[in-house]
Amino acid sequence: MSDLDNKTNMTDEVILQVKKLQTYFHIDEGIVKAVDGITFDLHKGETVGIVGESGSGKSVTNLSIMNLVTTPGKIEGGEVLFHGEDILKMSDREIQSIRGNKISMIFQDPMSSLNPFLRISTQMIETIMLHQKLDKKAAKLKAIEMLKLAGIPAAEERIDCYPHQFSGGMRQRVMIAMGLSCNPEILIADEPTSALDVTIQAQILDLMKDLTARLGTAVIMITHSLGVVAGMCDTIMVMYAGRVVEKGKTADIFKEPKHPYTKGLIKSVPRLDKENSERLFSISGQPPNVIDLPPCCPFYPRCHKAMDICKKQYPPVQEFENGHCSSCWLYA
Image (cartoon, rainbow, N blue to C red; front, top):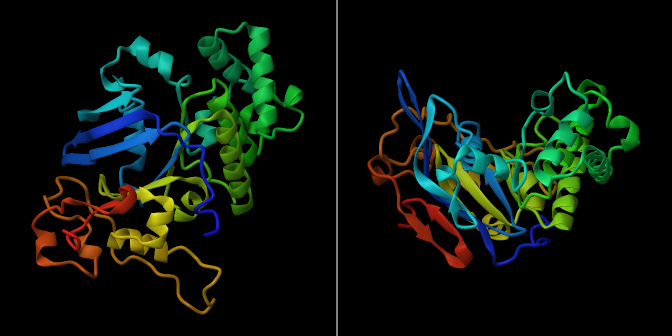
């Protein structure tokens, strides 16, 4: 993990505060607490990685930050303070001035995010004209500049192509160019490399790291891969069943993980310094059904260190050094 200490453009200025965020989905079978009391800060220039298995609440957390949760979902409580102002209490017009402008998002599948019936130029220029107050000619020049920065060859010609005329990796580069075209303060990347092969993944991650460093953009990276966050992130939040079970600096998480779930995730990552004959570790069991979860530790059925108290009560947050914290009865 040679990149663990190779960070950071992060400053002391906090630009986003998420406080006790709760997002529930009310369905016929019961209440799904997709996000249940998430709290964290994002500093200017910082990259925060949110890690966890599918269904842990990663994507819903960030949809909630953008106030994009739709029925049957509902943000039940908490605050999302952007420069001290609560996004969840803003009018539609105020939120529109922030989305795509101050806070931008790259979604998991670029083919479903890009309109297949519109040229790339149309989709990029519209956003730039709306938020940057540029005329059409200047907006097109800005779009071409961003495509060049994102590594799109012959950007002057390719900008008038349709999404299907790009490969998967190139479409993701277009999405990154679109996301950064208005110089946002925060970029939310929802598993931006999961649909790509390994070689292209590395190129996309290097591109994001380079561009956000140049522009001073803070990043929230959603992923199920600890390998991705190792080289990208300053801070890691590990989510399980809608809650953060461990949070800390990337180096601290990898050097001394506290929660059994975090330890399992790290052990399941292939290592170059291990013998090929060793079987890759796998966390036993399946993620819990999050409908009407009992007030206990949801990881206990899969935890080899589970105690009686784990089955009865959710553990309190235990703080360690350097902002490292974990919710586990082993340390309570």
